[in-house]
Image (cartoon, rainbow, N blue to C red; front, side, top):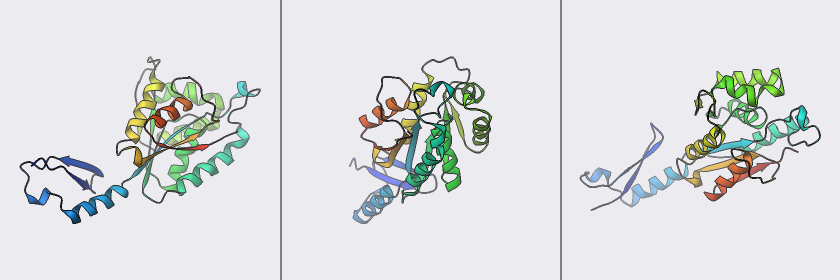
Length: 219
C-alpha cells in the first residue's frame, strides 16, 4: 500500500510517477525492474545549460572581458566540453553575441538538440544584445532563430526583470530531471558581482542547487 514507482517512458523521454494504489501488479516494482529503472535514470538525457559573456564591444577596449580575438579559442573549448559527455545531452541557452551564439552553433554542428530562450521578442533582444557587435553576429543570430526552437518570456521588452526571469526559467528547465542530470557551462571571467541576470548570478543560482559548473575563461 502506498508503493511509489517510477516509469521511464522512452517514447516521450519523461519519468512518470505513480502511487501504486489501485494499479495492477504490472505497475509494481520488483528487484529486476528497480535495476532497469536505475539504468534508465543513469542514461537519462543530460541538460547542458549555458551562460556566458557577450563578445566585447568597442566600449570595452580599456576593460576587456571577452576579446573578439579569443572567439576561436572559446569555441574550441565549448566543443571539447560538449564532446566530453558520453550520455545523450541537450543544450539550453539564450542568444546574445559571444558565448550564447557560439554554444548554440556548436550544438547544431554536433547534432545536439538545443533551444534558445530569450527575455524579449527577437527583434528587441537583437537590438540590445547582438547588433552592437556587427552585421556578422546579427546574421548568425538570425540563422539560429530559423534553426532552433525559440522560447520567449516577454514579447514587448517592457519587463525590466526579464533577464533574471529568463535565467530562472532556463535553470528550472535544465533541472527537470534533477541537478545530477545537468551541467552549467559558462564562458566567464570568474569575477563575481551582484548584477542580476548575468553570468555571475547564474553561477550562484546553480551552485545553490549543487549543480556541476564548467568554466571557460574567455580572457
